[in-house]
Image 1 (cartoon, one colour):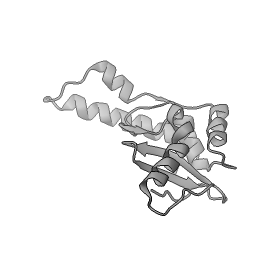
Image 2 (cartoon, helix red, strand yellow):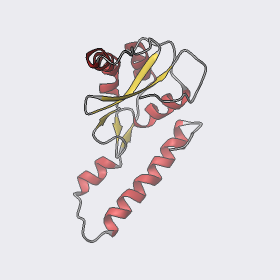
Image 3 (tube, helix red, strand yellow):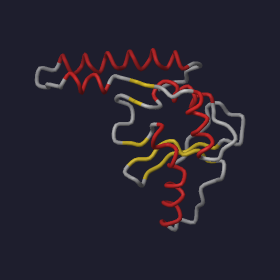
Image 4 (tube, helix red, strand yellow):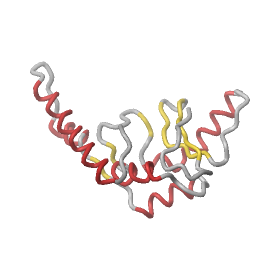
Length: 144
């Protein structure tokens, strides 16, 4: 998706992708899509600073990187076509760290989720992604 210095840059990028998404569906004469579906899939609603702070606190980490904060300011509550079928939005992210920790414990893989991990993605209740927060990296590597 690229590295965006501000939430506004990311929003502009996603708006353009949304236009391309609608254009590709509308230009395909074999596909019909409900207009409400198209609207839902191209609408992005972000989190407030307070909600982002709640996410940080809910996963008991000291900080969140700029790239994640910008992302959540744009699509934290409604993510359009991003992450369909995955849990990436505000209402889910609050509990993902505990769910991921349970997956690790129950799978007996000999790995423990680091205390400074922030779990931001889960799919099919078994695949999760996280980044580490005890550093100053504003665009940290993602682990799964």
